[in-house]
Image 1 (spheres, helix red, strand yellow):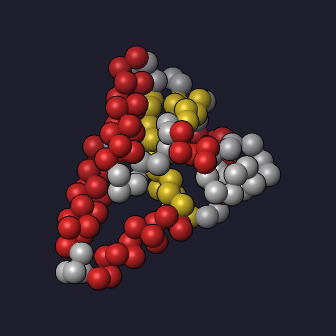
Image 2 (cartoon, rainbow, N blue to C red):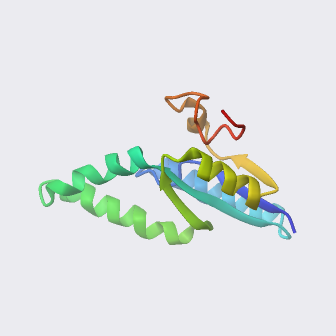
Image 3 (cartoon, one colour):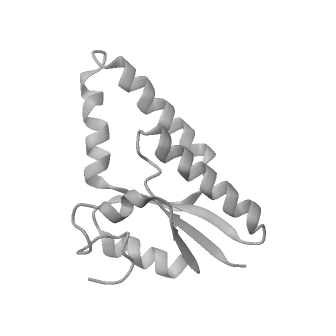
Length: 128
């Protein structure tokens, strides 16, 4: 059985990012029912902190608090990998991907615009 990993920004507090992740993973599962399809559960630690920062100011930003909680709860509807990476250790992520997946699909055009470009970017799967 082939293992297909999707590398994307699925943990963003963003409706488009979430729906793209959901739709892509389900469509690939429909087209390749014999494959094991999952979203590689990776988020940059810096992005994780950016999303959590506004939570410190509860209840003044109650709208964001509810939105954040809803997005985190909805992660259960995505076929996530067994291992979660919230890190800046890109080598750890790359090693996991190379060991676990036969095919990796880039699930979002945003991964190519990562600010450090190619150097150290886990979305570029080759080494540094």
